[in-house]
Image (cartoon, rainbow, N blue to C red; front, side, top):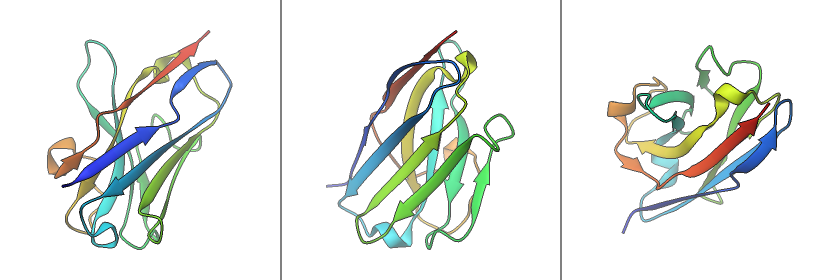
Length: 124
């Protein structure tokens, strides 16, 4: 059974930092590129960060570039998103997702497996 379980969300003031984690099981983690996506109320889900199977290639949305860092550990089947200099507009539900290739495109529809999400709220 495929499982992606996010944790580490919460509430933080603008300018603060959070690190969200995604523990996975039920599939061969090292054969999947991984991504973090988010969805704010009333908005479409958007891809914000992706990482290739081996962790060598990463890709970020312009809205988070320079502030967020995605990383993974294939031995632990886990992917993280370090979020610094958070802004109120970063408030959203954050999802971890996996796709069965080595592409790092941010398009949500290309992901095969999804977690349930973790809420991040940034106050001004």
